[in-house]
Length: 236
Image 1: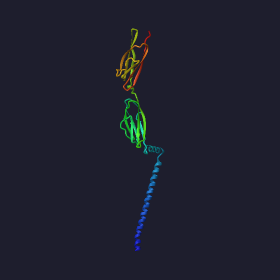
Image 2: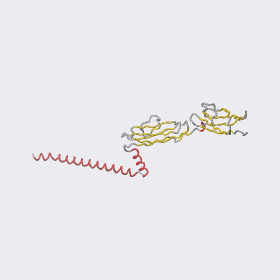
Image 3: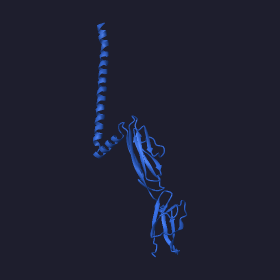
Image 4: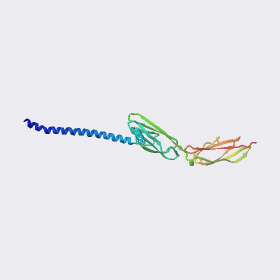
């Protein structure tokens, strides 16, 4: 009986040895695999030249983590001409909401988004980004709008075209012409300011002494042009 039991235990011992050996192999294999992976990753990092390492560090600093960041906020054109369009671009990470003042259309959290704008005058734009924790960040810039030279108001004539004398008093006929404007005024006041005026006209002035008049014309966008005229009153 004992011989039979002893004989039956031999296969069990062999199986246990095999199982133990297998477990040891799996442990060593996994450990070796982890070491090989870490060594490979380290070699890959060391293989990066300094410039690549700097780029990687900048990328991690910009996009890594959970902190709220404004990546960019700018206009394609810092200076435009009246009537010209440009685009405002922004980018944020880890933002819950985004707002631009003055409003320029539909904005939302995005790494890169651009929206067309057409400011009528110098315009400051401000971006405010809000994180999930309620923290806010802001950035701003200004788009400068310069006048279209071809559409600026111009005075093409402001001169005395006739001088007469009546009962000892001097009378002067002053003619004026202008372009690209609609509002006209003369100082000292020779007539009430005119709105939507024709681009030319004549007035009669009778100053007691030599006087300098200033003609001002203004267009719908508030651009102005001025010209001075000195009317000399003869002595005696």
